[in-house]
Length: 260
Image (cartoon, rainbow, N blue to C red; front, side, top):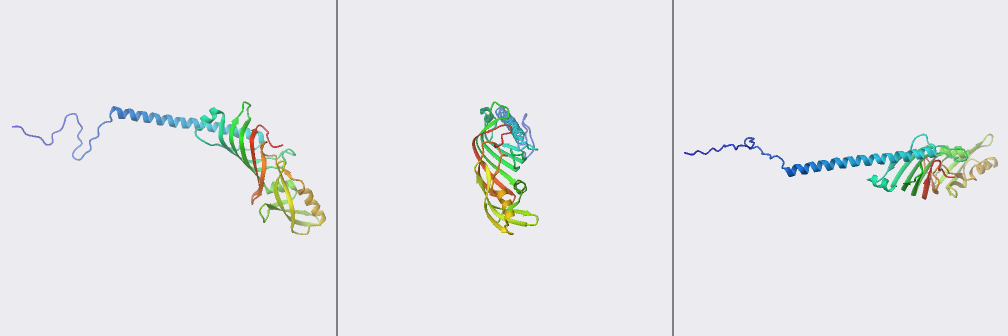
C-alpha cells in the first residue's frame, strides 16, 4: 500500500523549515546586468575624479598666473564652474571662473592704492598659446578699498559718512585744530575715484584747513590694482571701506597686467 509523506523533501532544493523564504540564485541575465551596472558606476566615478582633477589643475594655473601678475603674498582662491570641465578644456575655453584675492599691494606711483579684497567673475576664459596669458569674453569685478588705506593715500582720516555715497574726512593742523567734512565719492574717468561736494560737518573750516582739504581731495585717486581692460562703473561707501565695481569685455590677463 502506498503511503504519502506530507513532509517529503525534494532532492536538490534547499529547505529552510516551515515559514522560511526560498531564495533562488540570480539568473545569468541578472548577474550580467549587475556586472554592467557596477562597471558603469565605476566608470562614472572615475570620470568624475578625472574631471575634478582637471578642474583643480586649471584653478591652480589661474591662481598662480594672477599671483605672479599682481604680487599678492598668498595665492587667490579660484573656482571653475560647470560640469563636466574636460569638454570645456578641450574647447580651450572655460564657461565661468570666479577668483577672490586679498591684500593686493601698492607699487609706488604705478599702483598707489592697495586693494584689500578683489573679487572677479570671468565668462568665457580662454587660455592662449602664451604661458601665463588668458583672455575673457566678459568680466565683472569688485575692489574693496579699506578706509585705512584711503586715509593714507589722502593724508586725511576717512570713515563712512551718514548718507549713502558719502564719506567723512577729518583734517587737522597743529595750533589750528580739526575739521570734519562730508564728501561725495563717485566714479571718474580713467578708473579714478573722485571726491566732490565738500560740506563742513564739525569744526571751523579755517583757510589753512581748507587748503589742506583742497589739496587732498581735488585730484581723484587712480585705481590701478585691477587687471587691465576693466572700467570703473560705480563706487559705494560701506561700513568696511569703499567698494569700486568694474566691468570689461575682451579682457586680456597677463603677468603684471594691472591698469595703467
